[in-house]
Image (cartoon, rainbow, N blue to C red; front, side):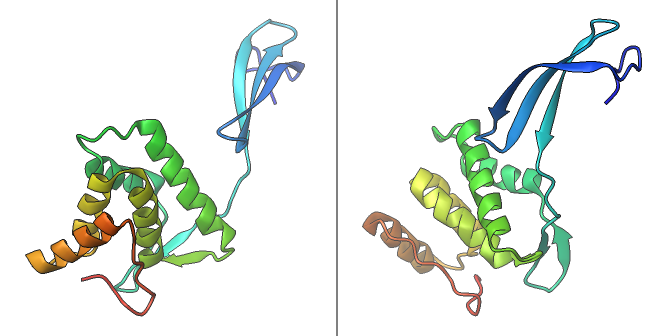
Length: 162
């Protein structure tokens, strides 16, 4: 590693600490010759996940896109940005834990539904209404009754929403 100020490679670590629930290490460094201080982060590099959509097209897993959908579902609820970041981290960890380079979009959707069901009922119903594409009030009422009972029914891979 080189100093971004003087390009020297005589760098020493001043402080190290775990961040992001142990998913990264933050290091404060100092260039010995010029005294410049800077911060670096070390994270485990994971392979990119590919999401296989219902129409069989593939795209890279996009944390930002998923976060945008969660923000829309949680609009005007007490859910914080930190809670949403944790939801995404939980989903990513579960997806990587399965050990497959490709994951079906239905699996991602179900993981989101599971997390939102525990986090906030309103956000869960909002997300479910889009994800499951309710076609009538009866299907919406069925989902509400599931929420009222405190249960969440997951679709299998054979049963597609909508």
